[in-house]
Image 1 (tube, rainbow, N blue to C red):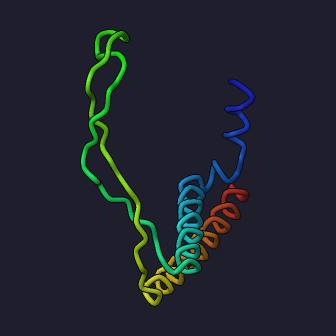
Image 2 (spheres, one colour):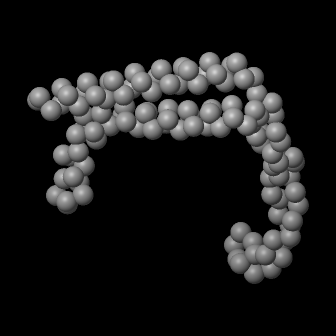
Length: 114
């Protein structure tokens, strides 16, 4: 067995609380995004702006020649946020983060005893 795999197997966080740890990272990313939206007061929303037609070099079968191709167009625009809703979301995410941390600590404590 390789050393890297052995390290993964002996890492208590991966061994005992891997799924919870992944969820914790996701929740922490969502907390950071929500805080950034609250600080800015708006969010950026992507919209389809229709397809654009361009000249492309190459084709499906060869890489020689000129043809028309379409690119899906998108653009971003600022959209106001509901501050109260974002604050509620932030409190909910922070509560979820705290619960996950407690769960991870409990799993690590019980894992070490077995």
